[in-house]
Length: 160
Ligand SMILES: [Zn+2]
Image (cartoon, rainbow, N blue to C red):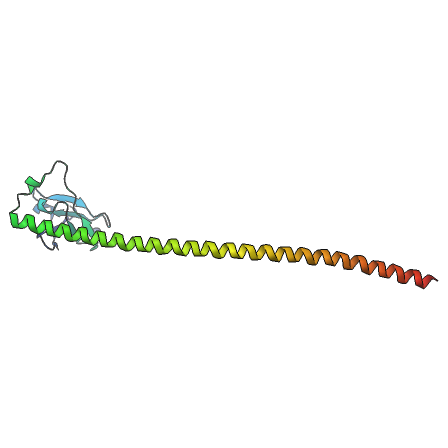
């Protein structure tokens, strides 16, 4: 029999626990950790909340079973408020993370356009050098022609 880890839950901070399959109640939510695949179960009131896997300690989102409604949770007003604050803290944290990632994207875009500019400058320099090489090549041809003409003149003079 595979062992399913029980995730014990309170409305503020979710704590990890452990249970055998015999201890799983019909109202429990059983799911696999998306990170390590370990089998996890939690009281149905944990639906939609974040907790940590007992096996790999990664943060996992407890799935909300199909057809489950808020009324099924049967929470006291205090628990509902606790969950609401917890959810809002998570939302604020996610929004902060989004803002941080947007800054990262902006700085990556800046770096990319700077690199693109540097690349264009390098291409221009290469074109300049290629033109200069061609000029040298042409001058070399002229020098070779002049040299052979000089040699012809010397040869002619030597025959007289
Ligand atoms: Zn895990």
